[in-house]
Length: 239
Image (cartoon, rainbow, N blue to C red; front, side, top):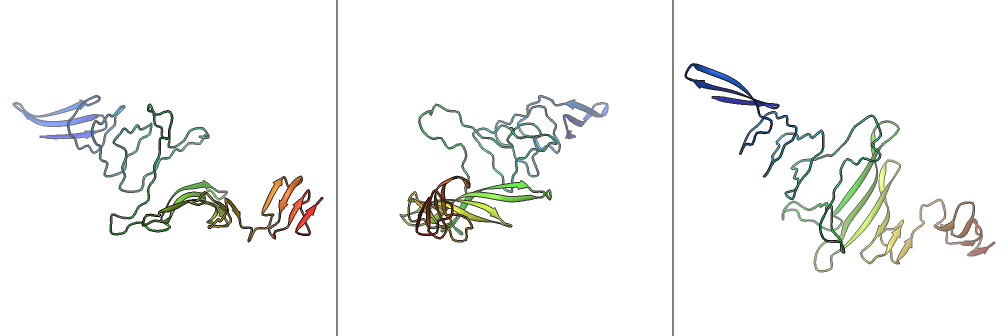
């Protein structure tokens, strides 16, 4: 007449010749073709086809995902929490094992795309990795981002760039960019040489070789060059 599953037990009520019969079954290790379960406790759960969780799926141990992959219609998160150090234990790891030992294998792909054909992607659409950490006020703050973006998203001449942003004050801002020509820009979003440095707004030198106490070569943010000095007074100062 009825079956109710909670944890590792199935509670079954059915009619018998003598009347109603109520039984409790330990379903540890049971194999079923299809089931709707409100609560399930299992030491080991193996799903051969698909598993759909309309609410939240919480795994306190580890989870292994095969070729079918993992899809979430809403935001998903992988996290660990403990009062001890987790310095050497990642919250999420991915690995690929195959016979390809001489070329690249993409272990992780992240995608940001428009919704179907109604809102396709365009120039400056980007996909990023956002880094966050807890501050001294015990709140989580975004501290850095690495992002790949389309600089030209249509036609036959599609181009892209890789950008690096860090926290300055209370917001992230781009500090470095590698463009589609292989040019690297520091302080500029449009590098025109293999290495382009824009010192506008910087307080220190634009370029230096050595340390702050033993500088061998230096270019100030005003364009003065110093060799053996940290304070050149003219276009070229040699000490």
